Length: 222
Image (cartoon, rainbow, N blue to C red):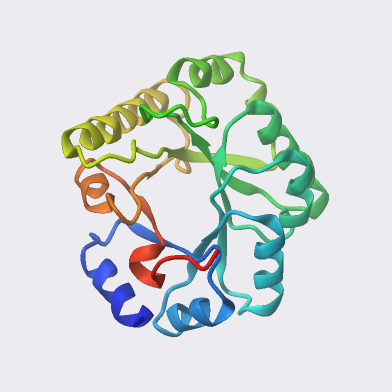
């Protein structure tokens, strides 16, 4: 498994404005170190305990993204160092991130997770529930989080037209939110979509951040 070669291959397919989150969950520290040695600095993890172990052991200039479903009772463990929380799926979670960030004297960038897939995954705002949360306006009082954009996962299918349609719907929704709620926010600029099997399609539909794991690190060692 040539991690550095794989990493360079993925990067060569990304336009300069698209950032790569290397998904290192379930992979050992050595795999992260190999990618780090090739220049990669943004890594994604989805389990708090695994992330905390890696954060303690690996270089301190790594930007760690929390990309999985985050339980409110785990926020306090990652708040001191997390660079971005990529999957905020409720106001309650956003408020807890704000509370823990305040204790650390930090402002934590967050992405709103939007459910765009046909599959009944449990997490993510619907378009309407996200609009409703933003209309209520309580988020404007949270001084220790900044909403930096949206994140979504397409249906796991071979139907490229369906995948493109879902990605396009997220891009359209991002533009709506930007115009309606975030027109004065420079921070609200990320459309995080695209993973190992579909990131070229996501880039074509306007993604600014892709999350790629198995294409870089190989299949995971569960």
